[in-house]
Image (tube, rainbow, N blue to C red; front, side, top):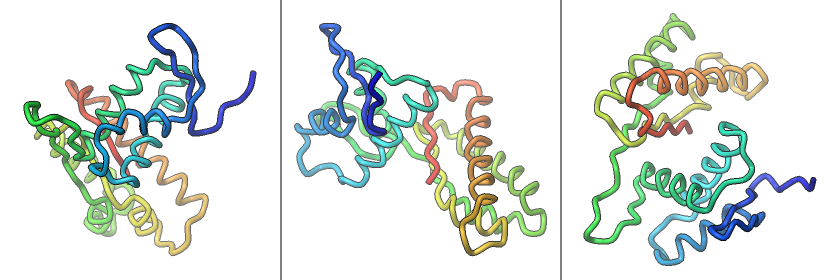
Length: 184
């Protein structure tokens, strides 16, 4: 079997045909009716998140065009991009948190205190029932917690632990299936 590029998925059309295609190409077709309204960098980040979701989290390389469209639009709405007509409802709410602030607040408790504060912050954000919970400043937070200036393997491990911890917190929360998570 031929291996797909990292930004490609196999899309199943309504006719049942399988087409390998870049997610960016399909997104470009979806966004064609909204020229100039969407920031290109934002779209690229959303595409990376959607491809990661299907490939890594769902373990799938083949999806329907409808699935991709639904998830992509959900991610864009979560990022505050409104692709709705005047008669439709506005974009869903986004709850923001600063990971570097939480790292500073953990003080001498280092990682143990940090993870407790992180869980409390996630619960506080989920209490307002947002469409997306966004945590910013992950790299700076990790370097601050480890007391390092340069990125290394230990930083990568802690970064992965933080992201996994946030995912677990979201999964444990009942009714949070409609809420997205973004960590930057």
